[in-house]
Length: 80
Image: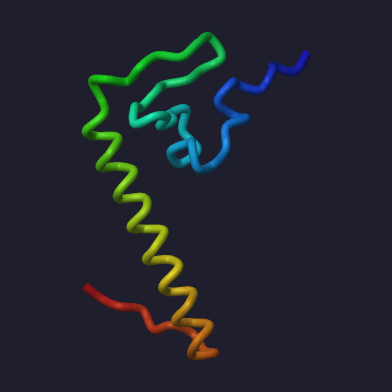
């Protein structure tokens, strides 16, 4: 018998953090699971930093795609 989808699986991507069972609603982070929801007050600073890092990574990837599309060629790899 298949298991039911977890309650957090139906949340929109704008509410979910990187497909994790963590959502931000009304300025607060919540942990959600099939067994219930819990305020994530002890993790808020770390979750805010993680969300900001993911947003920055998404912007960097979008910039790479824009640069590739604009040049109509491959984007050269940047070495650090």
